[in-house]
Image 1: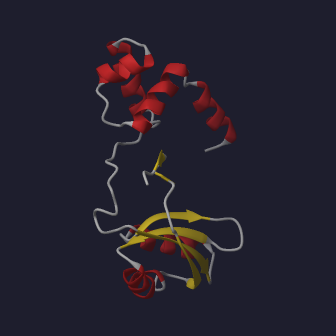
Image 2: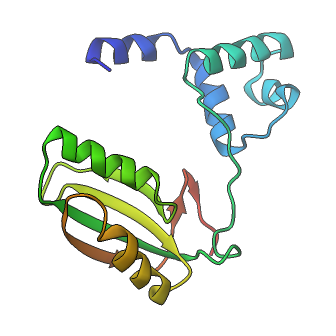
Image 3: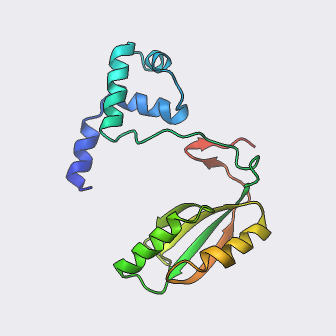
Length: 163
């Protein structure tokens, strides 16, 4: 997205559009009626705005936030990955393999001392060690990794995490 397009997209959102997005980021299952009440707009224009925000790609989907600890996936690590090859074909191969690895919750290409930062969930450190050895280290073009274990999640998914 170019800088001009980015500014244009920002300009088409008014305060009601931004309020809709803010409310839905906090609670994605709001009814249109409740959403309209929260943003002080009637139901019909709220519904029309919501449909436009979805159609135009400002709202790309909805998902349930789950308690990962209750699912047995409370162990979080961040993995710095350095690749041995950073040409476009190598990056694409790495990206595709990451998308197919369920333990990798997030993957970000980084400008800095390493190439990618992964957020990985597992049951515990022993499970993570196996994921590292069997999955992450075998991703295409991986030269080295460095793991950082999260001690506590203070904020995840845009929301504060309860203690």
